[in-house]
Length: 149
Image 1 (tube, rainbow, N blue to C red):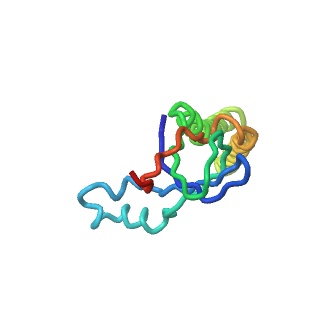
Image 2: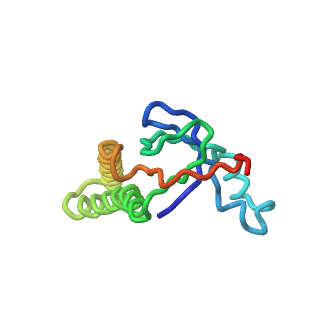
Image 3: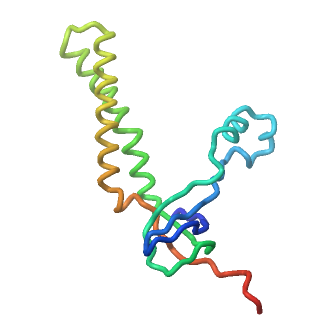
């Protein structure tokens, strides 16, 4: 399970909005101050990520929670987003070049359209699964450290 700590910023019945700080791997190495990739990552990465999800716990604004998503779901989502359009692009280009006598540029454009169509289908699949298996879940509520002893 991939977990992250987030802060509740809004509560509407059992629907809550949490805010989590985005961490990049580029700030961890020794040469991050001189690295171009690190500079780009710092410039374009949003500082806070907001997520709306259902909560089985009674939470208030300001509470810290642990949210998580299973690794298998992240791997499946990555596979669907990267491999399916890539295979569609390569497969359609190979099939069209073998089965037709079209010019290479036409084959390339049709292959790009095929990859775009498969990406659109994957996007529709994710939208249908919105309240299902690809959403993070609340694992636990963090204890309040501000309570007097």
